[in-house]
Image 1 (cartoon, protein in one colour):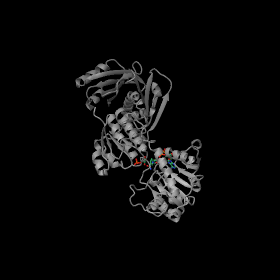
Image 2: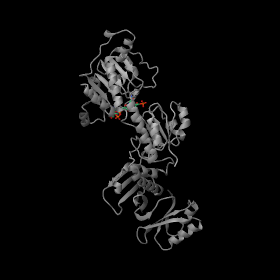
Image 3: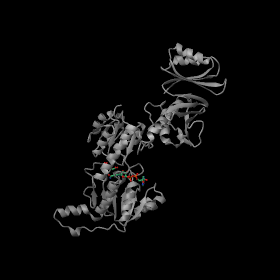
Length: 527
Ligand SMILES: NC(=O)c1ccc[n+]([C@@H]2O[C@H](COP(=O)([O-])OP(=O)(O)OC[C@H]3O[C@@H](n4cnc5c(N)ncnc54)[C@H](O)[C@@H]3O)[C@@H](O)[C@H]2O)c1
Ligand SMILES: O=C(O)[C@H](O)COP(=O)(O)O
């Protein structure tokens, strides 16, 4: 088996390359390339490991013809076009906890630095000025900290601030009252936070909802003398308004680790009074960098080598332990999806995926992805279980997952039912010996068949002589039959014949089969 190939395109702790190699991947570390250079190179890689410098744009993804996974050694993924990556079937992962303590500590350090003007005091002292009377700071004790975003980092900042005897108020639409009590903060709306906070610190991702969350209008509503820290993302604050309000003295100090445009080499904020900054150093400690490098390499190698999915932003998680157990189910799910996709006529409006017996205890999301991938293969060559749910959504397909505790005739069963403009059509399958997928029911008729390779599906009237006629037709057409499966609704009623054959079946043979006595439907299937 050829080894998966990974490119590390940003500066990363060397542990990442070591782990990739130990886990059976070939790895290249090539940092600092231009977008054009990356585009020229990316086609040969299965995995791309990045930090915040590499911008994974549509153009990069279009050139990434072999890419299966992007791993972000860190948290923020606003440098990756995730919807486009999802559409291309590329998994995007991050390492959500590896640098959170480090970044929270940086935010606290910035708060102290702003409160006591440490950078400027340091510069002037070292210049020989001894400017003791030029600096008068404020205490953090007893002050109110306004937290915008109370996720992993915000929560750590809150706990450190509470330790410093600050009061903490938090604005986060996804923070529940219970969680707010648990972490010791007051949940407030944004207006209240702006009015009450002596210090404001931001800890949200950059999204369409959070972009410019501290707009000029909101900055003007802050308490006079407020100090603001941003160690999250640059686009969260209106930088020009921040400059004006620092100059007017309404804002007493600001500490930014991140800028709307990075690298920030000529920011208008540079030189503004009471303004301090660092060059996106939030995650830059030895501990955090080792954490995220190890984690991203483990996660990506696990995915590329074993199919395990951890911390993916566009796909459900799947542990390395679950992956081998789910593998035969994924095969079965994809075949069933493909079968209904090939057989159902009319516009598909709804699909339900039922799991029964042992299958009911499994992680349903990957199975759902595999069914949809099988189904959507009729419409797209590049579909896989990552992008299939997105394609299904785009087409307005209503997807339902149902889990039955009951045990039926099979100890494990997957059933896929599609609602078409002509009514519901359902197929079901099981695993023989825990790992061999088998179709056991097609449109209400019991049958037992492996779905593989070239197949011929025929619905006919159950009557003597039919099997001989179809055997003769295929024989005369030079088509060798591999396996032969029969099922019928009742004696003399509707019967189903599923044949696997060694070569693709031509339209001419299908037309001839359709004309045989008693035949209702003929369809060539491919798995
Ligand atoms: N400076 C650095 O080097 C550095 C390092 C790590 C992370 N970060 C940034 O910090 C961000 C936060 O990291 P995290 O680990 O805490 O993420 P997280 O996902 O755990 O928390 C983000 C929080 O923001 C909240 N949120 C989302 N939309 C919001 C909105 N409109 N208003 C208010 N709150 C909203 C979410 O509910 C969530 O609780 C990351 O997205 C990343 O951009 C920066
Ligand atoms: O989102 C993050 O994890 C931080 O912004 C860190 O970015 P970096 O890996 O480029 O330091």
